[in-house]
Length: 296
Image 1 (cartoon, helix red, strand yellow):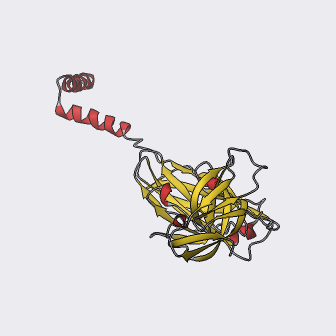
Image 2 (tube, rainbow, N blue to C red):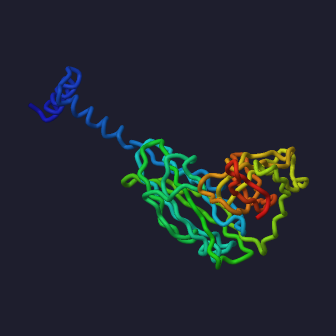
Image 3 (cartoon, helix red, strand yellow):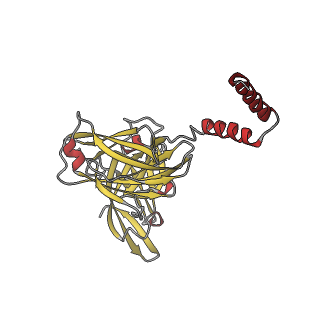
């Protein structure tokens, strides 16, 4: 048999095996197909939201800020978030170094409040150097970190620090593109004394606090605070007053004289750094029980 005949017979035999359903030929074809289709199995992607809400101006009445920061894994692979912080070159590194930060994971943004205790898994540092807020996230999930910023007495004034928080998500050799969120931290040259509230007594049962508000839009909302604790209900500008009774003060505020600070609140009801007025009130006891009066 000639060489040409042998080659022709071998080719015909191979064709017959494929057409006839040979398991060996089928296995070879499917193995090649699977290898080609599995080159891309998923993606990792990072996301961050809420950074802009960390912007504030610290003063004698704004001595700390507690706000949530949400980190996201927005693609279809499980991943580990890694964060870093930096200060832009056109802002104050000295201020960022003088603001202490503690951050800890919380179930929801609603759990990040001024009075919230620092939880487990916290990291501490400054806005110039903060350890990574590292979390392993399933695909299409997110985690909320509560951040609390407190300037030191040595913080420079006036100054502005532009802070960037950069996040990546990784899984094995897959690493997402970095994303960033930014905010500003400010200190003013001097603290302008806030205007005094006008207080009116009502026989120890309650007091009315009023303040000058003509310079703000009538839709502005206000709330009264003793330290970081809100007392009474929010009030809109058209009324220009807040009524406070002894029952509006939680047990964490002891009897005696306290300074009530009226602040503008934002659309979520959180206090801003704008103070509308302040003044003293005194909680005491009279014959028929708890009472309140204006002044000391």
